[in-house]
Image (cartoon, rainbow, N blue to C red; front, side):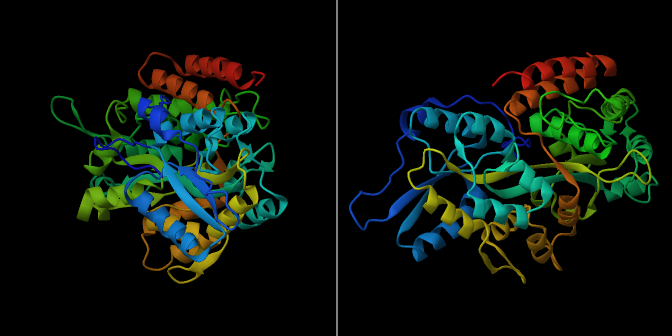
Length: 442
């Protein structure tokens, strides 16, 4: 899951894909498979981005538990920073040194499947995944209708708002529709006598692909639109819904309610942004950054264009799958079932080990039953809108060209926000560039 870097921006969703030279020198050593002597345990390697801090410690717990209770199969974890994860998968696979178990961002699944890296889930596991997880989580862990792994963390998007800033502007509660969103954004925007912005009404941020694109796609989904077609071969953002989203964001910037050049992660925590659309991972970070001022933070569903419209938002996520090159796929799937389907006693109702792990670091899984039990009485109420959104969130498209398509969309959104393109120009350019990417013969 994502955590802010030291400068206040999100570190895990930056999509630079350069592989550090140190990793090429020392990080590609083949996974240790055991001595090969009869009776020695199989040693599986699990490669993830849980490289430091609470994420590393959270994963260590169940892995240590498995290793202490299983003699035949042992698991060893390896980790790299998120920015290096996709490249590490591809480089190690090409060198014949891929890990047995992989933990990819689901956006990359189409690319990894096309490259022959991910193994389809066996029928029993695929059925467990389809039965146990929400629709968006299953779709994120699938490519072309085939399930490739167990969903781990799932991030849904919702509207964060500052209760104090809305109250001071005479607004009784969070907006439910886009007209209310605009009205609240303009009413909460404040400037000093020199025209400098003191408070942004609605935060639009150019921090990275996930932030810029994530908040736009959440609004697009709320409007009933889509980024790409169902078959993933063309973009459909140049639609009435896409035009409405781009026009909304353009108005917010043009009228001074949004300043995309400001780091929204720092500004919201400092009380300088009244509202922003973001993912559920942020709640834990805000709590630690804001201290007692976190009491001002509320979370509500992403507003819809008009009263009575059906709710929708964006879901992104990760999954654990098995490498096609693993010499012990059955053992790897056995471990993944234990981690992601076997239930233990959490805070009350039994839940899977992965659900307990994710909630311990302020995140969610796609298992709605687990989330209802773990996020019951005494949990942070700001996590509940993200849990509820599991029922209606739309998964991020994950075809073979998804990463490049996302980066192209980000480029054109930023051109719109900075006045380099009009709404029409941004839509046309996005359609032309993304169509060229996703329609390629891979």
